[in-house]
Amino acid sequence: MDTFSFLAQGFAVALQPTNLLYALIGVTLGTAVGVLPGIGPALTVALLLPVTYSLDPGGSLIMFAGIYYGGMYGGSTTSILLNTPGESASIITALEGNKMARAGRGGPALATAAIGSFVAGLIATAGLAFIAPEIAKFAISFGEPEKFALIVLAFVTVSAAFGDSPMRGLTSLAIGLAIGLIGLDELSGRARLTFGSPELLGGIGVTILAVALFAIGESLSVAGGQGRTEEHVEAIRGSIWMSRSDWKRSWKPWLRGTLFGFPIGAMPAGGAEIPTFLSYATEKKLSQHPEEFGHGAIEGVAGPEAANNASAAGTLVPLLTLGLPTSATAAIMLAGFQQYNIQPGPLLFQSNPELVWGLIASLFVANAMLLVLNLPMVGLWVRLLSIPRPWLYGGILVFATLGTIGSNPSSFQLGLLLAFGLLGYLLRRFHYPIAPVVVGFILGPMAELPLRRALQNSRGDPMILVSSPISITLLAITVIVVVVPMVLRQMGKGRVLAQLAAEED
Image 1: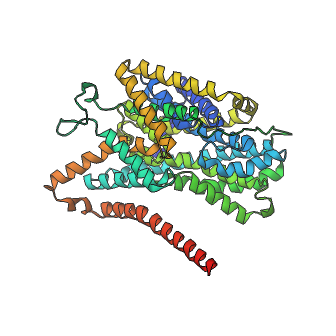
Image 2 (image 1 turned 120 degrees about the vertical axis):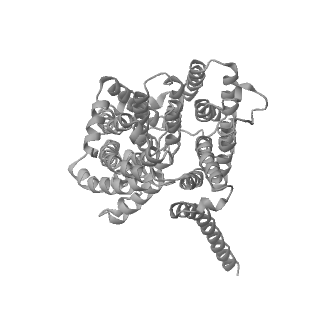
Image 3 (image 1 turned 30 degrees about the horizontal axis):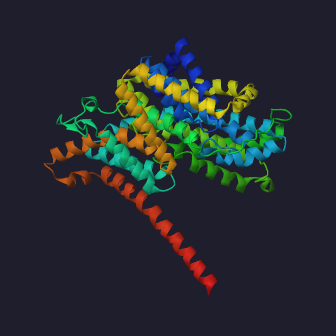
């Protein structure tokens, strides 16, 4: 059966009234949290994990994907009108978009961001539909050494992509790996790191960890005064619609941004930051109005916003086909799959075709919903910026606690929620990234099983881990990812020192 037939089946699932409602809830929540500074899609999905535990898996995952897409859309509103990027991928949008808003062109800036996101989302989702099944077919042939090498690559690249330094990312990863060891060993059945507590024999719940690190930790960080800044919202003056000249200057950047965002977003550690910066640099080079860059060039909003949203669809490629999250939101979505005992990976397209194709088809529906929600209702989203932060984060704390009690009414689980929430606060306080902790926690056991099975099959010979071209290639890429940034950093330091020495002479 070809991709079009599978997509037709997926639309039959996505267009069911219940799933349409889930998609609408997801994109609405996603847009709202994207607009609110400091509240991202990862935190929102984490908050909803305990609430959606008893709901239909397909509908819940459709809602989570809608939140992801909606968060990318909503972030442009904050960047343009508030000059406060909700995520690092929106920095470029703030650079040009806020200048446009100050010049009275906030409406066209929001319009090109929304329409560019819609165009990029449609093209990138189509790419996901056609490319993901082929990658899944290839990955089915992986043996235990190849699986282990792939997860090691994911460990290193994700850790290097988040945070200020690879070392801090790897430290966060090690914390997640240690937490993932708690409980019974799946192969031997022995207790590990339980400290004699029977409540820990089943391990730490992924929902508890995700809610604590993202929701509780973020709320405590805000309460501690992290990142308080004066906020000034630029009013939207004039028409929100784009002129003919705006359309002419935007459509090519939309397409070029999509071509940057989707493939780079699909790579391990590709993320959304790299394609947005590449898109901005490309548009500045190709523009017929280079003098406007830095002063409110519409191309500088259109291209990066398209790249940003295309990368979101690209991120779902390794998540669905290999079970590897390459962003914080993807890591929480992986936790969402696992709470329903569904493991994303090569076999997902065979074991749950209705779910995965319904999810992909729902992304097309979500894109259309977002375009309708964002442009006519921009005034409503701007009003959300007036919500006092104490009310906002106080509500998050209450919602997180009630959700945990509802899914697992236990004083011990509430204690774990507080303990990991304090861990999340300390990590933020000392500038350690949060996402690698969740990635290490989820992927750690997934790496341990193929490693031990491979060593059992080879009677303890570690050379089996480099016995195939695929595993050798993946491990070589892992080494390059670690070594090359270190070498470049040392070269940069050497040049700076040489320049200082020359100036002293």
